[in-house]
Each structure stands twice: as structure tokens, then as C-alpha cells.
Image 1: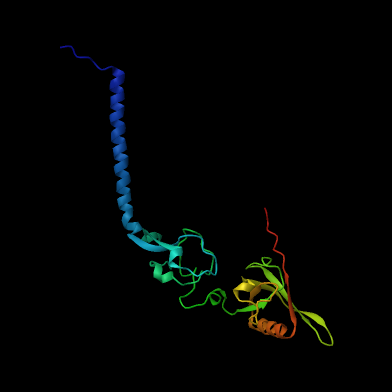
Image 2: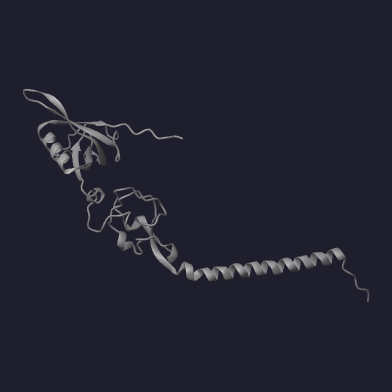
Length: 222
């Protein structure tokens, strides 16, 4: 019976294919072995709480705003939370991006109010009614506060300069400082030192408060 001989080229291709298959098998097995060797170093998966969406500074974190994902213990950030109940009700002290792990340095302690959580040690939060258009001032802006006094010698004094705006509350969020809702502008919550708080309280009681807004610093484009 006649047997057809394989061409030399076909034999070469077959040999190369066999070598390639063995090489691919060896590479795959080596990769799997390396993964197995790395497993003890990475550690077992542990639950970590992540922000499910963007969370603004000052917001109260709810269970709907977070999610739990398992990650290797070696990659767990210091101070990370592992349970939703541990972060529910805390205040975000910085902006949180979607997918960012939530740690103890990014949120307040459990029993702290939404304003107190944002006030640095040694400072105070002081609220004034500002006669500025709604939306003209945002948290993070800096303002100067002036007071105009009437009486026999009307005059205006600069009470404080360069105060950081911590929060901006609309009139509908709480009305005027006397409980009314007739203010022309928003209420500004300012970060101040205790002695500045005293000066602002005096100016607010006996004068008419005005604020001026500092310009933003010019960024270096280079």
C-alpha cells in the first residue's frame, strides 16, 4: 500500500507547533505558580468600604452611598472600614471620589455634628447673614467682614479679613439669624479664631454687616 510522505516543510511546521504548544503550556504553568507563590504575600481577601459615588465634603454618609468590596489584605489602606454600619451617619471631612476607600482620616467620629466635624482644632464656626447674591460665594472662598455703625458718628470698620467660608446656607435652609426669612442673601458659616468670633458678635449686634470677597490666587500655569 502506497503511503504518502509528508513534505519536509510540513514536518518543520509540525515540530514548531509542538514546541510552541509546550512553550505556551510552560509559560501558563509558570504564571500560575507565580500567582500561587504571591498569594501568601498578598493575603486573604478582606471586606473594605468604598464610596459608591462622589461624596461632597460635609455630607452625611449613608449606607446607600457606600459599598463593600473584597480586596487582598496587603492592599487594605490603614484605617479602612470593613462594615457599612461603621461609616453610616459619619460626616465626610474631605471630598470622596467614587471608588475611593473610606478611611478614618476622611470621615468624622460617630457622634459629631455636620458643622463641628469640619471645624479644625482651635477654631470656631461663626454664622453671619451676607447681603450678596445667592451663588456668589462658595465654601472655600475667603471674605473680609465690615461693620457699619450708625448714631452720632456713622462709620465703617473692618472687623476681620481673610476668613474662610466653611459652608453657605440658603435663606430657606434656616432663614435669618433671628429666625426670619427676610434676608437678601445667604448665611455664611465662617471659620474664625475665638477672639474674632467676639468681634463679629459685637458687630452683628450693633452694626450692619457687609462682606467683601477676596479674589482667587493666580495659579502658575508653567
